[in-house]
Length: 98
Image (cartoon, rainbow, N blue to C red; front, side, top):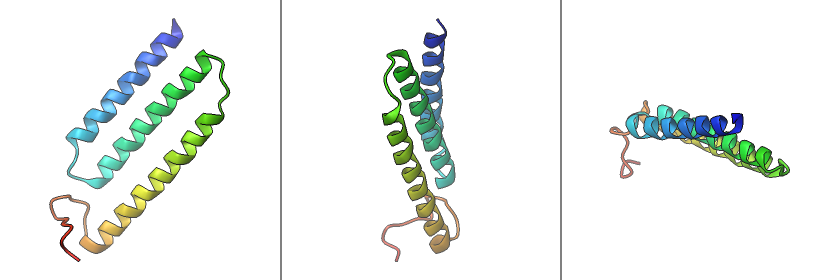
């Protein structure tokens, strides 16, 4: 029973993360934070799935490695955008500006 409640909680975490991602799309930092929350909820679902079926947790370490790389890439894009444009608003960002 506890495993089902944990799975429902992780699905709720994922839905809340997607809602925040779609509602707070003005700032790049808030979008990156909600993406990390979504990745965290997916990792929790993966962990519960592997725990439920007694699999090894090697794939979860690979997933964490890729999620850390995704977070570092997002932060580097954020720093680059703030250095060139001065803020992280998407309205002030244009691909045509050099």
